[in-house]
Length: 476
Image 1 (cartoon, one colour):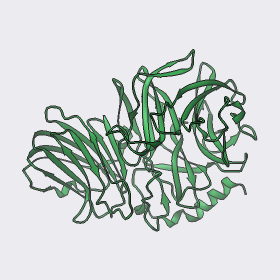
Image 2 (cartoon, helix red, strand yellow; image 1 turned 45 degrees about the vertical axis):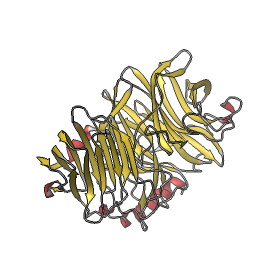
Image 3 (cartoon, one colour; image 1 turned 30 degrees about the vertical axis):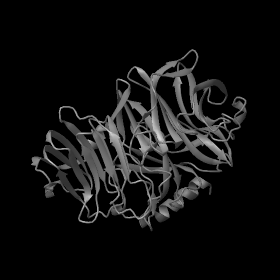
Image 4 (cartoon, helix red, strand yellow; image 1 turned 180 degrees about the horizontal axis):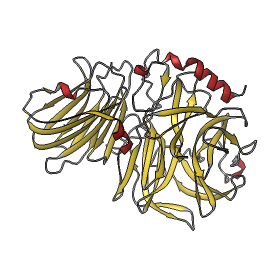
């Protein structure tokens, strides 16, 4: 029995230990064990495929496999056999990577991790079974330019253009800063180093991980997951952050030239390692809804790690707007709409709005107040809340009272736009997460919560009059 088969057998024997009520409804999770970065997000043979960093044997990071699932709507997922496992065909753990589709061929490229050494390997499959194309890595440390040892050389993103395969991967230079290298190949076996696509000038953390590179509209976008980021006002936050650059790609020099500074892709506590795919005119992206620096997993949990619900990216000017993918609409039920006016310092509760598994759309108008607070997943003991300061044009999200029992980042404030007293919010609440989309996705905040599930009220409070229209769609 190889390690793929061993992992699948362990899954079959233990998956029944977790009840459906103990996991999210429409955010993907592993059936058992640990999950981190999404990998190989792609559309193959009529369905969306999602691979992911997977340790089936524990709820902590461990021997890295590639778990695998497929779906038509990002809610109902079919679990498939483990696609890659450590030390099966090639010695080493299977770290993050991507996938491309060519007819009936589903090609994966991933990082092969051995101690401190990292190289890139290729496997090809039919949507269920995958096999490495050789018994060693295809992009090796010896392919790197002088000054790079192969330590922290990982997370390949591959595409094919004009008959040539291209691959970017992140590496760390002598100063500990991230560099995005570009390689090319005609056959997936022999790869040539092309040069530096883009590199960290020291303003954006240290090591860069999980680079994503794609066209959006008529511009190119480079997305980077940054380690050791230093806070700078409300643009960037400490620790692991995801930033993006919008610009142009010079195909002759193979250089990416950004138009402006890097921007924060998600302002919440739990968003990392996003991957995109392009299908039918849409660019969709999914990310790990988690954070390396905050272990909030409840005691006794049988799984750890969930994904964001996939989002559609749209470029407006030099900014990415993002909203939940439309596939979610097929799972709406019990639609409820209402309008009301908040009066000064009077709490407002409508029991028909209560839910822990729903999408809420709030339209806020005719504001004669300085502050508005919307309490989510609330009862008399617990809540998470969005506090809007109309005068200062800020939004604060807090999970301080969400049942946290460990020291963690619990509040974050960002600058927002309130034009003519109008503001729109889209909020996805699942059992263990909240995703907040402000002004049609101009800004997003994503966070885990582990609030008891019977805390399901939506409450409102303002220090003046505010008109609010709300539409709730429960999700099944």
